[in-house]
Image (cartoon, rainbow, N blue to C red; front, side, top):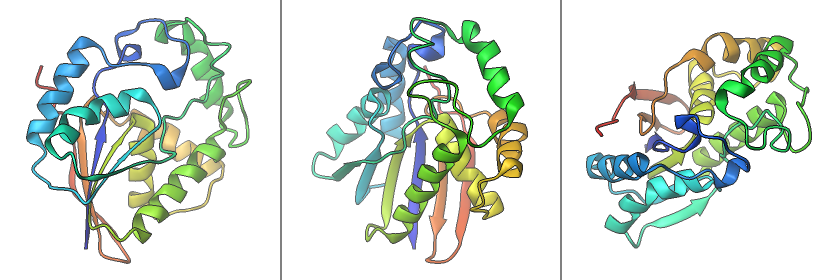
Length: 211
């Protein structure tokens, strides 16, 4: 039996509405660093493996916990956030300024559509999330903590709910109309287990924002 904790990163500069440029380099705020410390104290699992994305905000969130478990195996997987808007077009823009582009993207509901240079289609996003789920199923480690992002956690949960690996318009519509509206606050934890065949949600996402 595998036991997994999926944890969304703590509050980032983008979460507060600050202008950002490179999605990978968006850092935690001072409040986010405090949240990372708080959530590390609440994790009572001693993991065999800690997985993070390549984005700095997940790694910063993991730092306090990894200080408590310096010898745990850590890996960087392609579970970075779904950047469906072009970073170059969005450089130094705020969340509010990007809202019209976001609406256009989801209104199209085209799994192959990309907003611009260096952006990702929904189909590519779902493909790498599904590949990561299959990788988790095959790992030898039994107790795993994954520091990830809001849309990644939503996509994982969609698979657990539907058990559907098809990436078509219906899949994208389901994500847009159901999963994308699911609150995943900073430092929320989503627990699941895998018995070799079936994924089971142990605890729903809940808010651990204590600061």
